[in-house]
Image (tube, rainbow, N blue to C red; front, side, top):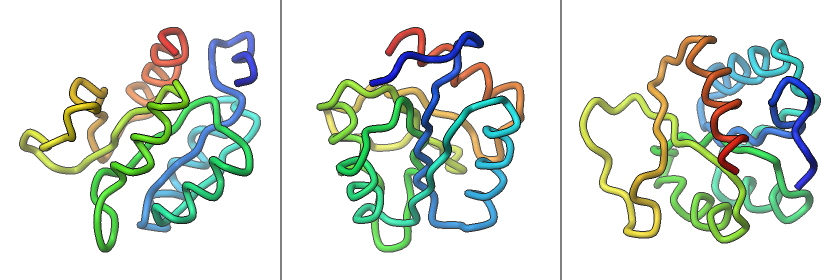
Length: 126
């Protein structure tokens, strides 16, 4: 994992989101913060390919993806000790696999302030 930049932000963020408009909005916002690289994946398979190609510094995972969920990606990131958060529009509690209990969650939609705070806080912990 490359070190975070001087602003305490990751250099490379992976967004796993199956809604292209939401993914582009997150990407534009994160690049606007000064993050060097933002990669997006609309499926678990594509996310795992991107991780295998180059591990991100941080990831944002939509819980519910078309045809399933992002738990396999989360488990891979967890095993690699890469910080990540779930992003969800679900109001209720999410039933997470035991290894992922306690994973931070961001609301969807997510304000710029909440997003930049999450990037900084979780990079410090990561």
